[in-house]
Image (tube, rainbow, N blue to C red; front, side, top):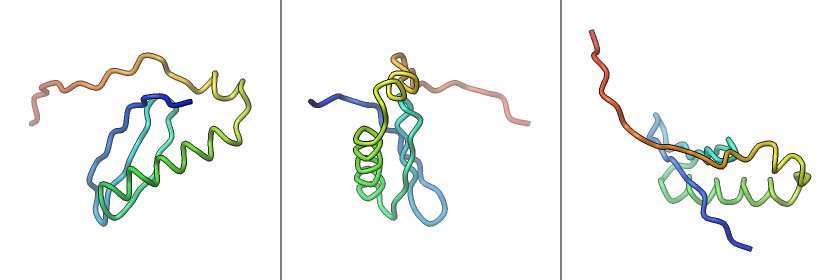
Amino acid sequence: MQKQLTVIITHEEGGYVSLCPEFDIASQGETIEDARENLREALKLFFETASVEEIQTRFHEEVYVTRMEVAIG
């Protein structure tokens, strides 16, 4: 079974961090593609080892990614 999940990738010093907010699982990599593939592997391992109850408990069905303006200084 396949499921579409949200992936947020940010650049940090030395590489990229990838996050799946639906399950609050993160990974990293030297490139964007590495970070994405490492997150895919982390999610795969999570689904292989977690109980049905843990998967249901951690799952956030509604995830909103947006931007907002904030005054600085």
